[in-house]
Length: 124
Image 1: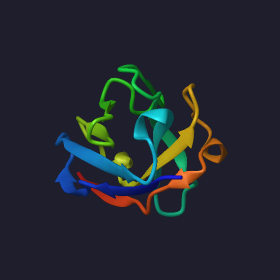
Image 2 (image 1 turned 90 degrees about the horizontal axis):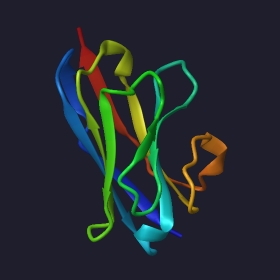
Image 3 (image 1 turned 90 degrees about the vertical axis):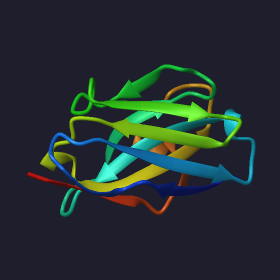
Image 4 (image 1 turned 30 degrees about the vertical axis):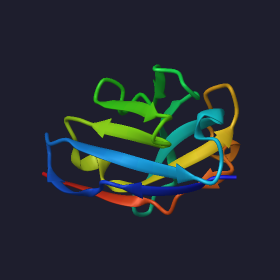
């Protein structure tokens, strides 16, 4: 199993950028598909982005495509979410998730390891 800790959230203005980090420990990081999800107040948790093992390609939700970029550094056991052109509707708690899998996963229930989340607030 793996333990995940998110960081990098904060309060920014619309149009600004943030980079979230998710540090993993406890297992071989490169064996896991990694994903980012978010949950706004009063809303259900939704898929944001995912990346498979050592792949440089990511999958994205339509709402963030072209603005967000997921990447990973297996040597550092860390996955990142670069968020550009942030909008107020991006405000949410962002969660890192992991699953031992060779393929990209976008469903929340497909992941079995989760971090505690980091708050991102975007003001208008």
